[in-house]
Image (cartoon, rainbow, N blue to C red; front, side, top):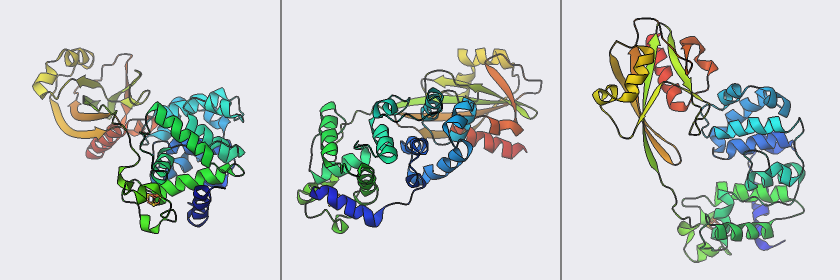
Length: 350
Ligand code: SF4
């Protein structure tokens, strides 16, 4: 075994994290945990994992649930395509989790990292994981200046990751290097003085720890302006399912008008979109601005305003909208900002 691998495993023997999904070889449970952790920190994802597995303990229970219910259990975790993909993949399995790397990789929502994690943890197959933690540790230890988010960079790091893998126990090595990146060689100000790899670490001896790994900035952030309307009559209000290929697909939201810039309430209510919407709901009462928030997603910043419209007559609807009792809001999976706002409104009227 090379020095890097043996030091990482030695470190892991003393520092491993006690995580529930590490006590199982069940590929289904490992798959769920890995998908939750794709874009979520362990501390935040832990409770979601426990609740999700309690409700959907196996492929069968997940495959036979409705997508709405699966999304409800995902509510608040973000990146909802993960939940939709989990559900679609469970349905495609015919009750049996695949046991070949290529078949695991072919599951909806599973990329190279997740396939390597599942196959090494559940089946002890010799596939090396390569996630943000692993990139960072390898880039620093081997002092590699190539950007990690280019095709050439990915190839180089994937080859190195494979070379470092401890093939008799790939599951131990993979968990070790991920924990080492998450706990010791952390993104900002790692405690190099406490690191067992300090003597041989390339970045440390070159004083480049805070410069590595290199990542090209490809992130084009986009601002979006959402205007939501809480249209209510007695204890009911209006929701609509988002069906377009966009953020929050298949989640429920309040009637929305998206604009290219922030608009005043006068400009908003004179817009064609508002006039068309009002043709359905026939709101003749005042529109009251009541809340605004900024919601940051990975590539988008949402500037959200909420308006309250309390109707004096029965809700008029069409097939795009549903009328929901405030007592039934728990039945609908909603994006976090909508959920927070509705809770606010409900607590002020109940
Ligand atoms: S010495 Fe510092 S940079 Fe190098 S592996 Fe250890 S923690 Fe990471």
